[in-house]
Image 1 (spheres, rainbow, N blue to C red):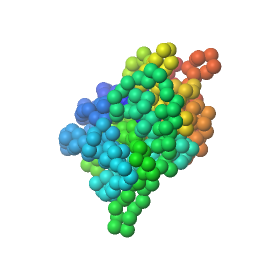
Image 2 (cartoon, rainbow, N blue to C red; image 1 turned 90 degrees about the vertical axis):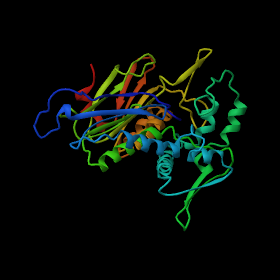
Image 3 (cartoon, rainbow, N blue to C red; image 1 turned 30 degrees about the vertical axis):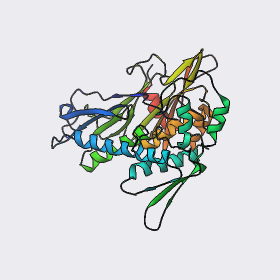
Length: 353
């Protein structure tokens, strides 16, 4: 399920030019800070009348988040649960990052009919996309996959709050493991955005590995704009399918065109179908989701890649607080686009010809 660092959306922050009205922040007032996290980059563009540098604050915040949700850190909260026999206890404040990701994952699981599933970790590891050694599967063993399927399903985990305020997370089998790869980067974007807003910053663009959230105006004095990449294996960050305004909202894109491997002519992607245990194969090349929070956009972008075009489009139209942009392949192998009604006006104005 994890996207594992697909840079599917690139920022088009347009860091030049003057503003249209004097009350707008000037382009040269913006600063860019960046670093590394979750196996990829983070980048923040913002303006601050006090000229503060939030580099250390953001770095520390991301360390704290990873200590809750990263499967690559043995001592993280999620790793403790994955190694536990049955139960771990969680503190509402100290483990708020874990709880936020878990609750979003549970919601996406229910809305998507199980196509988004946090318990997919054993299968992600088997197929070589997890925290274990990344070895391509050269000979698929259906018996092993069947044996791992017993650990998959959100019915295998339960979370409840005790009278003393402590949360208890329990698994039905020792082999049940969680994977926050489908929510972690989006959550990190939201956490940084909230940090900035808590410091009085109202004009910013936050980007973690292509997951983005914006507020206010860009350095040019108008809407922030982001580009959705052409979903091809050899495409670069500047190969843009469409550029759209991002108006105080977030966007996340998931796709199979970069994180995959090929064995004997067969391609295996990182998008694992929780209902079968095998990498999902459908005509959907990428799914970009727009929402108020990047956490929600991240989760549903992942779910949509599992659902496939028709079911994903139906769900996106039904959910009241998201919009989606899909790139898919038709029977002739040509690249096609479909998007929800809420994006129609934007897309008609901004699609790259």
